[in-house]
Image: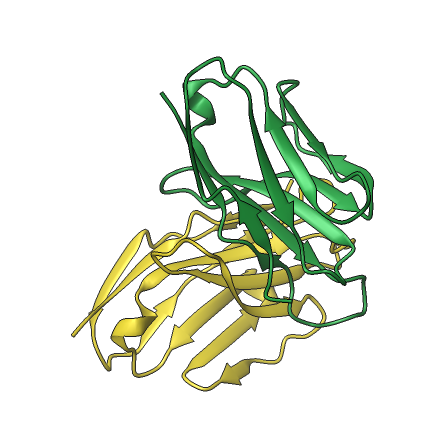
Length: 118
Length: 116
């Protein structure tokens, strides 16, 4: 069975601070995909990144960066110089080899509620 | 194409009634998924279609739930004899065929169901 753990239920920081959201996963698949989604108050899940299990290079996209470490089964997400608009719930997710979701579809963590205070 | 559309956005129903939700995926996406999200939790996978074929169903999908995608385009999710525990946000997502596009699943805004 697959599992995604986001241990941080809620994080509150002041604008312009850097913040890291943790994600730890469990899977028996040798090939898998990891995702991060943002869910603002409107409710729609916004895709941020997909990373496959063979690509351990860190990725940077503007103020966002992701650190994938297979040795610790972690896929952490850092926002640099946070802004109020970054306030949302962020979900880490895992899927199996089929990318159709395997036997259980995308497995999501419980999410981290990020609050950026002005 | 403006994304994945779901209708209605909100539904309030009395316990025991049947409800049906609709999802229109991105037109070139052949894969369609239904998820359920309760308050304070991440979405949970319910079922998956590739074209018109329903290929996977979660054990969460009781016999009161049925999903269809008759022509491989839009999909419907029906809940019969609703219970208060069915109250949740029902999310639909679509994705392109394998190897086409690198942007993962695209989710709709969801249908929020409240059973009273």
